[in-house]
Length: 554
Image (tube, rainbow, N blue to C red; front, side, top):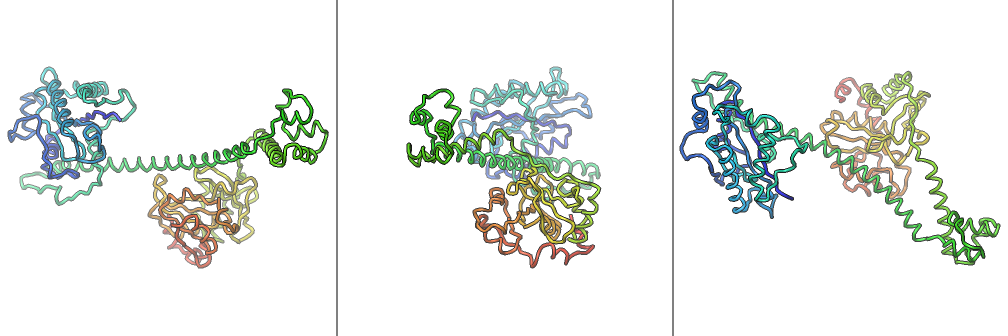
């Protein structure tokens, strides 16, 4: 990959901010991720003891400084790690000396040709992950006035800055990057946060300065702001990065689920194709020859069995005997297999795949369903209302409770009906449901963009709701998933209704079912733990009902 040039800027609008930036650059202030055994190098600026603020004041001169003026510009200049260490791009703190020297020479020449005496200082940092240069520039325009807007204002000026630096290091094999791309411009602070990804632990005893008697409260407040602002900027950036990565993780997980579904479909089609190839149909020309007829274009529209039945004017059984006698049992079976397969495919193609249509809701009967679950199962109204608002639980036109089944992509695949005429924890499958394609499931705890860290497998929707209430409040994202009638299956390999591939990615999986179901699932999920109720989760919930308990519900 071609290494890219890095040029980031930060506007400095106060002397306190300038002092704070200098403290970081000169390592007068503690810097996480910096190696104290490595010495940084000043590449522009004299060796005098003048501080950065004094250098900037001398360069500005006696002109009047506006209250909102940019006093100086800090510029961070670097390149991708692959330039400095092409053979070990991920090894922090390593670089090839000749490559570094070439980069420093090109950068210093660029700074001198573009800004000359306006560059008051530049430091080469070697004590962090990747070598980089901090340059401080006083933004004086051609008239000698402070005018940052004229030099660096707007996207056009910033783009020209990137062009200029990119051209200066292009001979080193470093690219400017894609001009005009939609990538968001990253400030120096955000870039600095990105290259120092360790978590920030602020030691207030070390960071906060002691107050002086001569300082006013406002002066001390401003000093604290200047000291802590860079640290909090980095923390905020890392928190935003975490949220973005979590969202990206969930999107990738969704893509993985869809890819797995596509893989299974293609695998099924491949098996059909493989069987068809292994048992190739009898050549119709050969069959026509044995039948004593001439081959014509009409034969391409037939198969061997139908052709024999038509010419010999016989039934299916007689056609099979004729084929066996002429070509043997293996080729007779191939002819039959292809005949059935072709008819099956023709029927499938003529009839589009049916989309599941759930039962029609009746909002007028919902209150009765809501009251039923509260009275008979102690399911709080707050939870059933939430499920109803999300469309996962509602009343149908007959007054039964409808629990929707969904796959892990949240597509509705079926429905289970629970009659209000019984208190038994039983459900009936709604016609048209794809029983092994989805489940009743809900997630609780944290926000929806957090990854699921725990999965609870239960035998029914009511058991899932009961266990979710018993576990409240949730400190992390937990999935409750009802596996439909798994105990009715006797062979572990037949448990296709369990989303094994997804559950293997969840750190903690608990089989919250009666003991007779556990062994079979543990063969598929060896790391899963057992979590068994004394009777049922709902009965345990009923034993623990009470106002104080429900107050703890999420």
